[in-house]
Every structure is written in structure tokens, then in C-alpha cells.
Amino acid sequence: MPDILKTIAARDPHETEFYQAVTEVLGSIKPVLDQNPQYRQAAVLDRITEPERIVTFRVPWLDDVGNVKVNRGFCIEMSSAIGPYKSGLRFHPSVNQSILKFLAFEQVFKNALTTLPLGGGAGGSDFDPKGKSDDEVMRFCHSFMTELYHHIGINTDIVAGDIGVGSREIGYLFGMYKKLSNSFTGALTGKGLNWGGSLIRAQAAGYGCVYFAAEMLATRDMSFDGLKCLLSGSGNVAQHTAEKLIELGAKVITLSDSSGYVHDPEGIDKEKLAYVKILKNIRRGRIQEYVEKYTGATYTATDALLDYHPLWSHRAACAFPCATQNEINEKDAYNLINNNIKLVCEGANMPCTPQAMNIFLDKPMLYGPGKAANAGGVAVSGLEMVQNSMRLNWLEEEVDSRLKIIMKQIHKTCLDAAEAYGTPGNYANGANITGFVKVVEAMLDQGVV
Ligand code: NDP
Figure: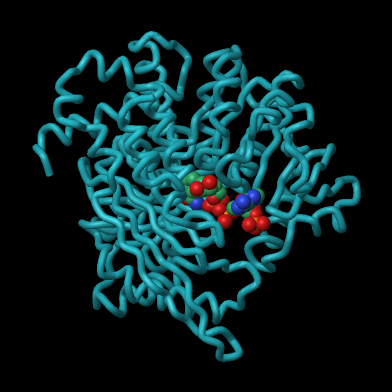
């Protein structure tokens, strides 16, 4: 075990997700370290795995009947080597320091891949917006921002959404940020279109994921036309991954939430997806309701006792995990392989366990790691920042075409780096190596800070 992993395990033994994310990157970069002894001399691994700053804070708020509630807030600023921290905010009961450190660590490499000058971080809270009224969500977001605003800013740390933080939450957060800072700036991205947001930002992670996957397929002279696709999740990333896949002629047959999944053998078309968007984004319902409207589909509730997820047992050509970390385990990976899967492309961050990932990498299939494949979200956040600075709004076509170019560039960079370091076609190695070298070279230029 490399020394740095021993140090991390000894120092923070409970931070399993962070340990997993670091282990995965270390698995790719040994040849880079061997060819560049100056990296080890400058202790870059010790530095890049230790956040520049972690702030935890109390978030008190009042529920609708006047009870005082308290959640824990986090702001993790991992690396500002190549630009101000750019963080996603996650509101979910599972949120803890390990999960946010893993997200922040991945974000550093992902942001480096986008070609934009953005560092990496993550933030959030163990607050659960599910089942809360809009007023409760507003009071929580306002309280959360009364502390977070000390740490963010257009040249410091720019925050966007992640699980549990969509346009509603960004609106409340921005409102309080604007009031406290007395300035209307782009310190948050994912804003509403009539108050500083960018067209295509909401769609960006999902569309970008499909653009990346299309590039991967093109290396095998394939397109999405007629391909069956399995998707997990039914939130922002899943909805827009499905939308672009449908547009490109693929047949999306599954969607899920944490309670269960739906399988629609006829395919989830545009009209059905429009229903899902209203169900999830406006009515804030559960995916189970899909089968009440579309009776040809079946619903399977999540069974915590199963050691696999039946969603990944359906026969399909492509799989897009778009829900959360570690949602595809070793057994799921074998189920996908036994059904002759051709492509797995990660809309979510770290959705495959290390065992699942190694199974995919050992096969002649295409495997697109999240830090490359879902980088479209942060890329268009970067474009939103550019538009805010210029005080203008680009047209939808302009943002979408820039997103396509960025995803194409990320795809090429990953392939080139994988080839250069002796693992052709291994996008995971390509993504890790490219992001690592860019960040570490900046660290060396800036000295020991
Ligand atoms: P949303 O909150 O919009 O949707 C999350 C979806 O995943 C919901 O369907 C949710 O179900 C499901 N989910 C969440 N936690 C679990 C769990 N523990 N088990 C099963 N299902 C779960 O989040 P996003 O779509 O924004 O994010 C999804 C993934 O994409 C995350 O990994 C995120 O880090 C990543 N990502 C997001 C980007 C963005 O711009 N938003 C950019 C890049 C990556 P339920 O409603 O039941 O909780």
C-alpha cells in the first residue's frame, strides 16, 4: 500500500469514500510519478490529498410548526492550484466529511479536465429536502448561507448544485448571498435564466455525459440509434441524460430513485420523460407513480437485503448510472457483462465500486469515468461565470456547441493520455493522469503553499 494511503487510513479511518477516491487515482498515476521524480520530492501526494481548508458549521432553522432544527453544514476547499474553488453543494441525509472530501477530490481532477481555470471543492449538509415544504427549504437555505457566504465569492469559491440542490435551492441560497454580500455576482451557478443563469446549465451534466459517450461509441463506429439504455436516478443528471439519449435515437428503459426503479420495455419517450420531469421537479413525487400512468411499465421496490440492484440485470447495450456513489457493485457489473453490455458511462460521481470498475476495465467494452463523462455540468458553470463577467447571455446554440466542443476535447485528452502512458482505451487512466499533471505542475510553479 503506498505510504500516502497508510497515512490517510491512519489519520481518518472512517473516511471510506475519500480513501476509495484517492486509491482510484493513485492506481493510474504511478507511471507519471516514476517519470517525474520532482513530484515525489515536492510531496505533491501529501499536499493534493489534504484539503486547503475545511469549515463545518451549525445550521439552525425553524420548521413549519415552529420547532428548532439543527443540521451540520460543510465547506471543503480542496485545491486552488489552477483557479478559484468550484464546488457542488449536496443536501442529503448521508452527507458527511468523507463523502464531501471524495467529491471535492474528484472535482479537482474533473475541473482540470474541462480546460477552464477552476480549482475544486465541495460543500453541503446532512439536511434532507425530501418531504420538506418550500418554506422549510427556504429557511434552511437562508440559514446555511449566513455562514457559507463568508467563504465563497467570484474569485474564491463558486458553488453550484449536486444531489438535493436544484434550481429551487440555488434560488434561495443566491437570494441570501446577494443580501449579505450586497452584491449581485456570479458566486453561485445554476441560477435562474432571468437572474444571471445560463441556458443549458440545467441540462449540461446529462447532455455532456451523452456527448462523451457518443465520442466513445464513435471510436467503434457505433451510434446510439436503436441502442437500449439502462439509467439509474431520476433527478437532474438522469433526466437530461435520458433527454439527449432519446433525441439521438436510443431507447431508455429504466429510471430509479432511492425507493425503487421502473422498467418500461416500450421505452421512455419524450412525452413520458416530460411526465417524469413534472413528477420529480414540480410535484416532488416518487418514481413509483410512473407505473400508475404508464401501465406497460413495472415498478420494483428497493430491497436492502439484495446484494445486487435488479435494475442492472436487464439486457441493454449501454448503462448510465446517474444517481449516487457506489451504486454498481461487483455483482451488478457481472450482470451487465453477462448481458453483453457495450458501454458504461458515469453520469454520477464514483457510481461504480472499485471491483466493478476493474471488471469493466478488464473487458473490451467502453467505460467512461464520471470525472470525465459528467464534467459538462461544471464546464457550463464555467461558461455561466464567463457570461456573468461579460454581463451578457449567449444563445442556447452557442452554449450547447461550446459544451460539445469541451466534451469532445476531454474525450480526446483522455484517450491521448491513456495511449501515451501505455494503456490505450483506458479512459480512467487518461482522465486521472491529465487532471493530475495539470494541477501538480501548477502546484510546483507556485511553491510550497
Ligand atoms: P438529484 O438530487 O437531482 O437526483 C439524484 C437522484 O439520485 C434521485 O433520483 C435520487 O433519488 C437518487 N439517489 C440519491 N441518493 C441515492 C441513494 N443513496 N440511493 C439511490 N438513489 C439515490 O441529483 P443530481 O442528478 O444532480 O446528481 C446525481 C449524481 O450526478 C450525483 O452523483 C452527483 O454528484 C452527480 N453530478 C451532478 C451534477 C450536477 O450538475 N447536478 C454534475 C456532475 C455530477 P431520491 O429522490 O429518492 O433521493
